[in-house]
Length: 140
Image 1 (tube, helix red, strand yellow):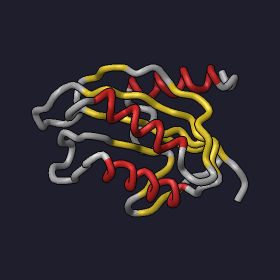
Image 2 (cartoon, helix red, strand yellow):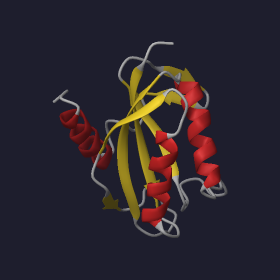
Image 3 (cartoon, one colour):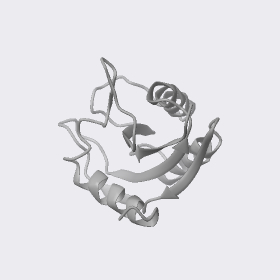
């Protein structure tokens, strides 16, 4: 499979948020057929949804990968589970949340995977982080 660039959002609002993000970045760098190209700044954001919870730390990374969107999703869910992610409450607090925001060339539209992510253009922090990454990659 040819390489593509995937943009993956990282978020955490439970436990040692910095450590969860750091371990996620290391795990992303160790995925097969994948290389981290750039990382955005980490920023603290308000939680989304109506479930009372703490503030999130968010960041986005650009990955050069040969993985398809589906293969990447499987890897991201494996990393989330390794960090103790549970899916008890929709929009609830989490140790680690990894979302595929977009790929440069690939798309997907399945029941459980839509790329680009439906919220890619409406979450301000994702737009800021994506802009920062694209500038770092020279895609201004």
